[in-house]
Length: 176
Picture 1 (tube, rainbow, N blue to C red):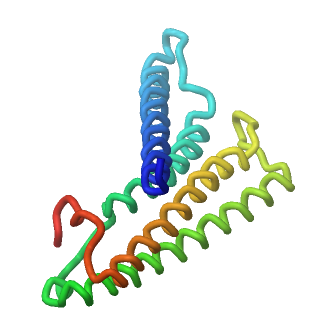
Picture 2 (cartoon, rainbow, N blue to C red):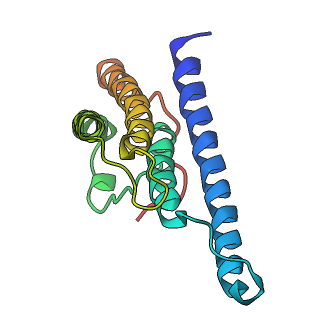
Picture 3 (cartoon, rainbow, N blue to C red):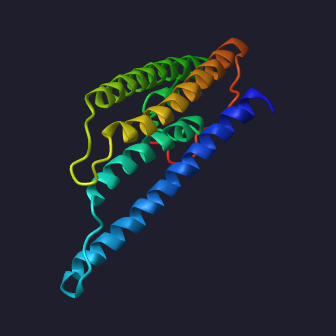
């Protein structure tokens, strides 16, 4: 198994896990809403539903980002770059990949620091009383995968500039 396969598998499985979190959050939200509608017959909302949605959605977002970056799914506005040469576009792709990588590193670092602070101070959620740092730890772990993907993508972009040819398929989806 080569590095590319490992990075792709890591990002894909993290995105699948994020999708499973979204499905679980959706089911729990429906159950909670139905419970609220039938309070008169003894049902009620899921205790702490807002807390669970907050933590789960945060993780899902971070779980999807590496897969999105790997598949060039971020917004791509080529108002003027379509008129530039492929060589210049490869350099621009590298520069933007570096910027995205630096932002990803910054986010992962600050998530880690924030998680450590929440753990140190023992902050807990209001209703369920579970430690806030648990959700932040999930997000930080997904952000670390994002950093791995970012470094991988920077390496790919450097090779594209050096070799003078694109190594990745064109971005899928709409181009604006």
